[in-house]
Amino acid sequence: VIIREVCKLPSDIGRVLTLGPELGVLCNIIVTLTASEHWIMDDSIRADLKKLGLDVRKASKHRNDYAHGVFALGSEPGTYARLLFSSSVHRVTPGEEEITSASLKVVAQQAHHLWERAQDITHRLKALRRKRP
Image (tube, rainbow, N blue to C red):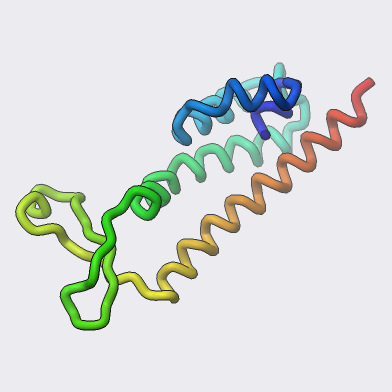
């Protein structure tokens, strides 16, 4: 939605153009759109959007850990774990990170905070668009 609003694209065209790229690519597009006043004249929106794009790109690895991770019963009875394959030693035996409702809540709150920032920027962009002749 942010890319569509910044580029002043109709909804259907914006969806088609942003449907396929991975999250990192979309973040790169957003950061590129903030590089000059050409696309966004408002300095504060441009600065907030650039920071959001960089923060989402940084957080996307964590998102992929959960969205595409491997989950199993933990090595301790009664635990649930996300299996880790992040180092060479994990090729033989995966590591594990215990998953609890508290640890999932932390991840969910971080994602929600990024979503709230994106919503704020989207509303500000739409308000600017309504003001234009």
